Image 1 (cartoon, rainbow, N blue to C red):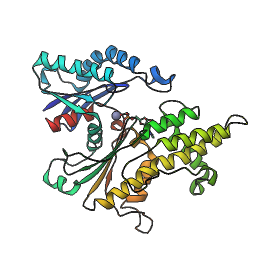
Image 2 (cartoon, helix red, strand yellow):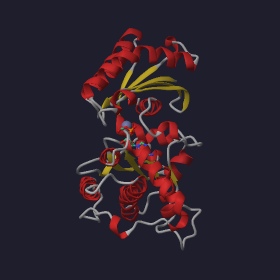
Image 3 (cartoon, rainbow, N blue to C red):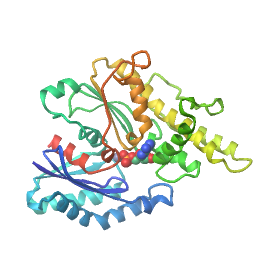
Image 4 (tube, rainbow, N blue to C red):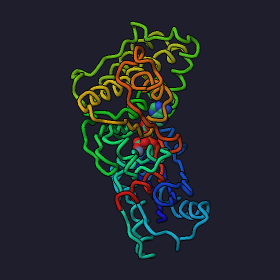
Length: 344
Ligand code: KG4
Ligand code: ZN
């Protein structure tokens, strides 16, 4: 079955064509980064206008690069939330029009669930085979993006039981806000990661968080809820205090980025460990969403859960974990088509 996926929930317009919900024939994204960068965040009205401008041509292009025709499409999947209302409206109206015109079935898709399918797209085995379902599920799935920090327990590929979520800012949102505090560009995640890496590259194994940069931890450590606003506020006062006598040096910013990133990701690792202890039957952990592009995140998961780590060095029991391919971490339409095909 050939599925067309359409995504426009935030600041990326995306179209993808997938065969059998698994094989990506084309996946195109029109990014609005340059449009919003100078505002340090997404401006909703500008975003919806830009979606409207590009969606028609992007759809044509995605068909062309998949070497298929509109007559070949059998299903349309479109993100219908959560997201920016105006932006969602552009994608869903376009998809509805197309579905009516071609008499095609239309599947509305939850954007946060779809992110998990971004990680599934990298799996080499057939997700729905009995063998793979038995080896992979029950699973813990964590989506960390600019809008969400959701932790699910999944009994099978279609089952999402919400175990935890953020009570304030999302993890990616916190990266973006801290980057802004430090005068870095938007989106903050990749810049903070690069700054932190410069710090660790210069120190190697010696890199550690200095006592002046110890980060606050969420009050209720044992709950599966997340919180990022305290961390952000701490950074706000720290940067204010340290820049009283002049701008922060590049080196200090790098060190702050390192300390911040360790805690922003550290919180996720701690919650995953609690969830894994409370759900002893889980067979895998799936990580998804924009923050999953972070390489230090992958390394920390390896240190905590990796089978390749010696048990004496690992801080938790070994659990197989999966990250998306880099193309499918941030918003894209392949994940939407894949999830749409799965729930159709
Ligand atoms: O999933 P996504 O593209 O959009 C939403 O659904 O929100 O996620 C975007 C978020 C942004 O907050 C961005 O700063 C963050 O993902 N992000 C990262 C990295 N790359 C993107 N956060 C940490 N490290 C990264 N390398
Ligand atoms: Zn997203």
